[in-house]
Amino acid sequence: MIVAEWKPIPELLASLKGHKNVLLVGCATCVAECAAGGEREVLTLAPVLKMGLKDQGQEVNIITRTLERQCEPEFVEELAEIAPQVDAIMSLACGIGMQLVAERFIDLPLYPGVNTTSLAIREQPGLWTARCAACGDCMLGETFGLCPVARCAKSLMNGPCGGTRKDGKCEVDENTECIWRLIVERAEAKGRLEDLVKVRPSKNWSNSGHGGPKRMLREDLR
Amino acid sequence: MKTPVQTKLQQAIAAGRFALTLEIGPPQSPNPEPLRKKAEIIKGLADGYNVTDNQTAVVRMSSIAASKIILEMGLEPVMQMVCRDRNRIAMQSDLLGASALGLKNVLALSGDHQKASAAGKLKGHPGAKNVYDIDSIQLIATIKGLRDEAKQEGGDAIAEPAPFFIGAAWTPLGTPRNFRVLRLAKKIAAGADFIQTQAVYDVPAFAAQVAKARDMGLTDKAAILAGIIVPRSAGMLSYMDRQVPGVEVPAELIARMKQAKDAKAEGIKVTVELIQAVRAIPGVKGVHLQAIEAEELLPEIVKAAGLSPQDR
Image 1 (cartoon, rainbow over the protein chains, first blue to last red):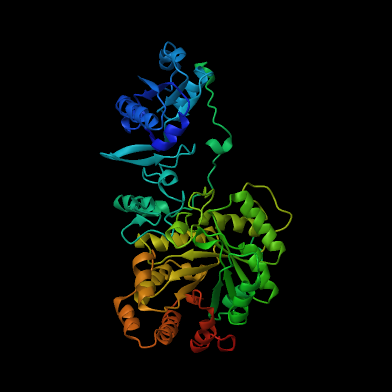
Image 2 (image 1 turned 90 degrees about the horizontal axis):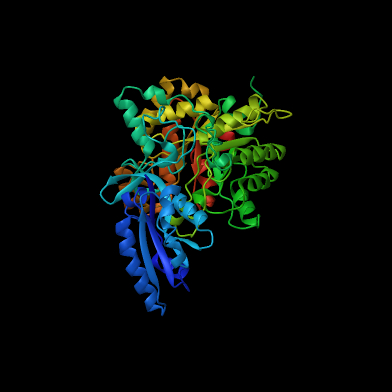
């Protein structure tokens, strides 16, 4: 899923300064799964913002909505009825959903309520960890299903750096596994350590954002 | 095709002399004087002098500039290059520039993550964007391409080959330990001519890893220089054992430093013993000796260890 997290409340309050009627809009898909922008978070955040602004002497009316998917124009259209009643929109969707809302309601200022951080899984209750970097050149077949692009702090392609801690964690964060340690262990368990000896040549990053904004065209579907 | 390379370090290794490299960290300053001062202390002792590339992700004078400054003083630099800050375009451009300046030894490293700086006393730049376009092994292959094929990583030709003596780092006692020799093999397959290791204190464990490398024929293909960091206190050793990945310090060595009346003198003694011990390991072709922020100890240690130029 796409993972996002709330921006600091003071930052949210500052962005809403001067507004009287705000539409706080969530998304029931990824950001709901990661407890950042689903209906529950929309309903939790609305009174927090209202009270926070009141403390600063600002009365604000907050209208809440949660769309099934903020990244689909059909669902975003559901906001058309309510949009004329507000003077700003705050979105708790990922950056994709936010942009669709901003584009549809071009005259209204759109404020991000969350920071989109990663493509991740819910590893444990309350813990999300990155799994994919959308690099555009998948190498999972060579690394026993574990991604070093997203999960190595240095995106190393040819094995662990010298910074693997004794307990197998990454030098950058004592709670993060050195993914190369896990790749090596999986290779060993399958008796295929030799597979990791081949030098992987420099990666082609051009099929991700490094090649310019991604544009995938499928003529057969047009 | 292999482009011939001649550096003092390469010649020492080729001649079968026990090689010695030392290290100089460039200053956090635009003033070359502190660098020249350090260089003056250790000039004439070693075959090569590593010049670090923004180690611990703290901004310092560039490795290329500092390398050139010590080269002008008659010290042969080993220019370190990390993959953290530059993409393959910038690195190859800097390599051509370094070659034009007469720099011939280069050590390819992953580099400390930018978060490492925040772990120390300095602020560093933990909010920086890292690059890691290519990793250290891909950098080795890239340098080899510039040297042996006069070809850039992308395939375009360069007008003439860039003669580099290519180095790589090795953490023989790192986790996962049974992959570390294979990672060394990858670095050598990619083109590393010499290897400098993480600090060695546990000689038997190090010797066991070198023996595996020897069995794979790796010690014939690249020269391994064992890393030795001069211990200055029991506290420093126990910190390194706990906090520095890939460094194992035997408890008895920490106890020995603790009991020593004169820790400095004991540290020098330990260093000399370590040098002699790694020298006796078949396949070890030299040492990379560091006295972090205590360069003034090096002339005495080099002499006591029998590593003075006339003794090697």
